[in-house]
Length: 338
Ligand SMILES: Nc1ncnc2c1ncn2[C@@H]1O[C@H](COP(=O)(O)OP(=O)(O)OP(=O)(O)O)[C@@H](O)[C@H]1O
Image (cartoon, rainbow, N blue to C red; front, side, top):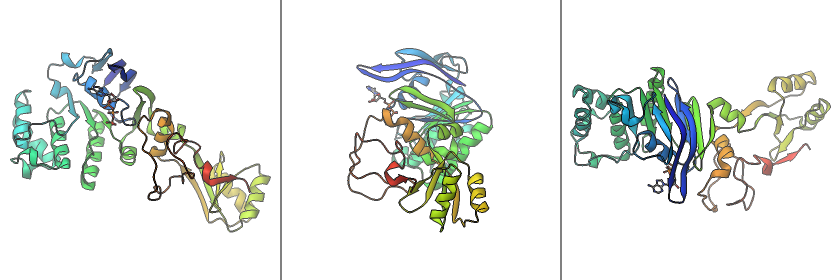
């Protein structure tokens, strides 16, 4: 378990982490999310005693990091995959870590095998690709067989097989009762991996909640309806006190009424439906909705490819300073009733 109490870090004028209080629990994967510059890496560095807090504390299973007798056996971390001696082979890099932490040499081969680097164990790590470096960093984190694992952007540079592997690795580590804390900007991956989320913006805690609760609270859920008898369906819905919105392609979106009731209404009036589907926003949409006010670094919009599937079409001229995607979700492409 990792406990943060009022954790704060100031760099000059910049308050990078601002009074964070939360608990990262064992047995689940906890995702750590926040826009660029939100303070995730700074928080993780303070957890590992690599940076001194300006105020507040971090306890690792009830102890300060510096009080841990064998830190690598208690906490394994991947913060920066490039933070290693590039002239050493993968094997020697891990052997140095093992020998300086009282870990048996035999463990080096085990973790190299776990991360799939056995065939390049004798090669110097400076020749490694980004993904290979990530795997070596993960091997280092696993070396002491620790109860607590922290990964900062672990899927960065990994190929699809590697991403799939690390997803399963994290789930398995959590299933063994370990504490797994992982940051990532890859929302689709986080949605598949994390059970719980800690979200920060400009150093402050924005959410500390289960994945399902986070999406439900920060997004709109609705039911999509499509019928060749559009007008009759609108009349029936109006008669039942249901006010849908019609999208530009004629699909109806209904908030606040479940799909079963809508389906029964249509059936009672013998209206053919071509679609009746409950919709739940993605983690990405919920994240953007929650963090809209704390994004510090906005890109300027420019003419480019279509937005990702499932994302609302931005209104013409939408740019920095305008409501972010997710705020006023879909309002630009919908008209009430009709
Ligand atoms: N050593 C440092 N000296 C000065 N400012 C720093 C230092 N480290 C981080 N910062 C600042 O603290 C803030 C938080 O940075 P941090 O790297 O923790 O954010 P992050 O959430 O990890 O960002 P990203 O998602 O882009 O990696 C940023 O404004 C950053 O510029």
